[in-house]
Amino acid sequence: MRLGWKNIVNDRVRFVIATVGIAFAAFLMVFQGSLLVGFLHAASRLIDATDGDIWISARGVVCFDFSATLPRRFIDIAKGIEGVESASRIATGYAEYRTPSGKHQVIALVGSDAGVGRQFPRATLEPNGSVLAPEAVVIDSSNVGVLDASSLPQEVEINRRRATVLRTVSGFGSFLGCPYVFTSYQDAARYLRLDPEDAMYILLKVRPGYSPEAVRQAVALRLPDVDVWTRADFARRSQLYWILQTGAGGGILIAAVLGFLVGLVVVSQTIYATTMENIEEFATLKALGANRWFIMRVVLTQALFCGLIGCGIGLAATGPFVSAIRNSIPWVFTPWWLVALTIPPGLLMCGLASVASIRTALRVEPARVFRV
Amino acid sequence: MSEPNLSVRGATVYYGHGPARRRALSDVTLAFEPGSLTLVRGPSGSGKTTLLSVLGCLLTPDSGWVYVAGTNVIRLSEEERTAIRRRHIGFVFQAFRLFHSLTALENVELAATIAAGGRRTRNASKQLLARLGLERQFHQKPDALSGGEKQRVAIARALINRPEIILADEPTASLDSASGEQIAEILVDLAERDSKTVVVVSHDERWLRHAHRVVTLEDGEVKDETWPQAAHVRNLPVAFC
Image (tube, each protein chain N blue to C red):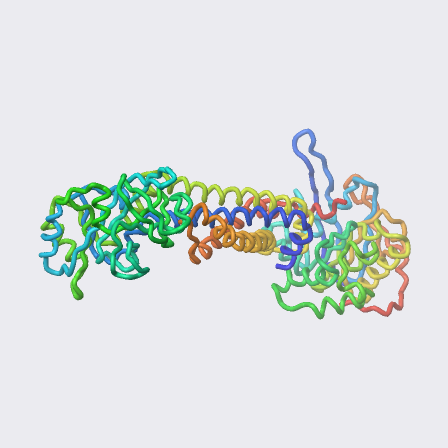
């Protein structure tokens, strides 16, 4: 539909306004979507990083970060259930972190056994090694500034006990406002003053050939006073908690919808103004014998042309912006599918924006072509 | 004399509602034959443009009948009247009504695309523009064309779908005398050589010496109808469609 796109390109100022509006809306949708996806990832990041097929938590635990204790003997009980290959523990809790300069920071301390998983951050002597460093912790690289740990190793105190920040890992930035600090299970239990008879999370690996769900049911039957999850279910539970129950996800979702609406209004106004400016041309088209579908296509082409160019610019701007903002929001994440998913609503937005214009163009009286 | 392919019978058109309602056409009956150029004249407000709108299926009369190529268009739906326009009628407007974002060639092609549903029409459009002396203006936009050139592009657009009927509203009003004369000759030639039914609405007295027939409207009624001496037979080098 040459007429459609030529009309819109012919008025460069209007074209720029339309594409900038759509670009902004597309950018806003992708960025808000990146916050949402990143938030979801971060909410279950530690769960996803483990190898455990089954998680056992105290009854009523809603997410990884707000844990509660359960009896340590449950580990032995769980180990005895058919299909369970091994069991390991994770402990987490909030602690006070203090540097030699006197800086205080509340941290989320996470301690884990060796069998939790190769991707899970642990304070080993060598990166990816298996020998644990005593009283050592690792932190996420995005928290170096907050934890005053620019030169490593760094001597610090956690709950007034000595610790050494050994090195940094990446991809484990916290969205809670207080950084994750990783250590061994034994050190975490000591720093958090965990009772030796208690545990927090028990992770079970299922023997090959056994169904995790079947084993989960067997564990739940044997341990009726705790919650037993598959890893995926516990990850989903954590995500739902942060998204739905805290309102944080709702806020991000609303911002994404607002981005869509802003774009809708901008494109509607631009397309409508273009249609009204060319209303005589639509009357001429009708006089020349153009049917309704032809006229609709002209308007839709204008809208979709603006939409494609605007979406392209908006999406292209998202990548560099997200990279730049990762310093302050380390967990923001833009998967490729989010970019792809933004295009249909972007084009839908343009389609919706052209509805009023199409109605106006279709209603124009063709006899007005004789007016001068 | 050929059979008329365009006619109105007892056409009456009202504008407005209530006390503001006024009659723009009053029981007008006229027929137009192929091969003739009819000039419709009259003072402002006499109903000339309303008549042209009725003839062009752009306006449905409140009473009376309109026949285009043998079809009574009064009972047709808007889509059907649109199809009648597409197939049988070409328009030439005083204000040219060219699409300002398209080149001369694209303007002609657009009309062909509307009728042909997307078939390639570039060569036919080029040929038509060339025959109207616009081969150098193919790729110029209307803003870069003179008034006469614009009107010739508009005529090419009206002719590209080979309609039997050409309706022209003040086609020379915006043109200088030389360009106006050229346009008049083209339209006369379309009637005489190509047997088109040409209806021209104009205030321009120069048309009197080109028209085969002159209809004078006054207050929406046919006041007078004359057949002046046949228009000059010209040996124009151009044959259209």
